[in-house]
Amino acid sequence: MPMDKKKQVILSLRNISQSFVVKNEVKPAVEDVSLDVYDNEFLVVLGPGHCGKTVLMNVIAGIETPVEGKKYLKGEEIQGNDRRIGMVFQSLNLMPWRTVLGNVEFGLELAGVGKKERRAISQKYIDLVRLTGFEHAYPHELSGGMKQRVGIARAYTNNPEILIMDEPFGALDAQTRYAMEEEVLRIWKEEKRTVVFVTNNIEEAVFLADRIILLSNCPAKVKQVYDLSPLGRPRNLMDSDFLRLRTEISDNTDLAL
Amino acid sequence: MSKKHGLNLSKAEIMEHRLEILYRILPLISVLLLVGLWMIASRDFNADVGSGFPTPAAVWDRTVRLFTRPVKKMNLIMHALVSLRRIGLALAFDWTFGIIFGIIIGWFPKPRAFFTPMFDAFRAVPPLAWIPLITLWFGIGEFPKILIVIFGSLASIVVNVKAGLSAVDKMYLNVGTVFNATPMQTLIKIAIPSSLDAIFAGVRTSTSAAWMVVLAAEMLGADSGVGFLISRGMDSIDMPLVLTGMIAIGIVGAILAILTQFVERLICPWTRKSK
Image (cartoon, rainbow over all chains, first blue to last red; front, side):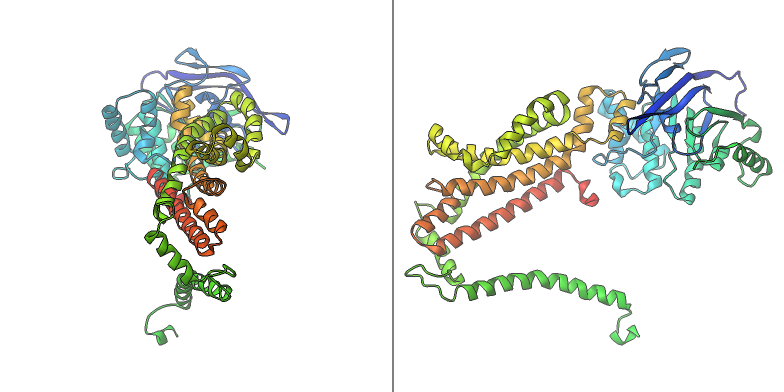
């Protein structure tokens, strides 16, 4: 089981607050969030509604600069974006003008990695997400689940230490979603990284997580942290412990209206 | 019920099949109707005094005569090629300077703020209004005509490129941020490719605009080109020649449109399905 050695903190957020502007009105999205992410854990950030979660992930990825608070990577304070943090986006953000291979090797291309090496690394991750044979397909030719696989491969290719997945399966139908949850666990086991996975789906959270950080509704604050290591893996959605924890979290979750 | 037809087609399928046939026939009917109307409109045609509307046969004869007895030693195709050469040179400038200028004012806010009023004033002036000044400055050679074509077609490419570059989707830019893109990489690897369809819309509209303007420029003072043929026909009350010129314009314009569309599909294969 995980964590034989002492848990090492890889990423810390301290007192992060962020707001956004709607119609000339400043609204708080994230309020005073502090959290630690452990090395190689599968952390799920669970929260209701639409505000807060993506903003918090954008802050971690450096897409947004928080109004207040600090972030530390391996004890060092970082600002803005960092090569060691990768992201799988909610809305896929695949580039329609690039093929699967072109999308997957995009980060390496920007980093100036030579063509041969780029191809080899990209191919490894295309194989890992089981898209072998689709290298030269364009995103519009792929199904929703396949597009997400491209997104995951693209994030993996730059070899980040932390992989943020922002509600990656929100737009998928239930069947594909279950399949992709299993896939994400398989990929994570084969290529261990620290994963910060965002979702508003409690079942998905309990199925995937080593730990769950439950956020409150707008503005997002840390409401409770759950340790799921007693559940073990693989998990069964019908297991009594699974259902008990699922109900417990459900009762504790704010209603998003 | 559907077995009556011998095939196992549902009613909906039969309807769809009939519709497909209709869709193929309709364009044909349209062309036949046009020729029919033309024949009716031209029944009072008198070639000797040039009164009435020329008949299709007269136009055909005139077209053939244009090859046997060329005007200014040039047959119809040579005149068309002269016009095409003029727009070709003008478009070469449009597609280099115009695209670069469009990218600059679309992507960088300061040049946009500075150049937009100047550019808006320039494009509000119809290109033909420049003819007196340009003729006065540069005479009546090839260069002034090409300049008029540039003035008439540059705006459409700049406007389209600018629109594309100033509306790059944030989600693509976020990918660049996460991968540490430099500002130059963001422009070259994200902003410009994501605007390629807008750039191609500019290529298409500038091509058709150039073709319109070159004919107008030729009608006002040239001794070659399809526009010249039309004004020559007007001056010598040779209406079949005017019609020949008009039809040539239509055909060349259509070929240009198909050609640019073909090139777009070649360069941007991903737009094929998303449209």
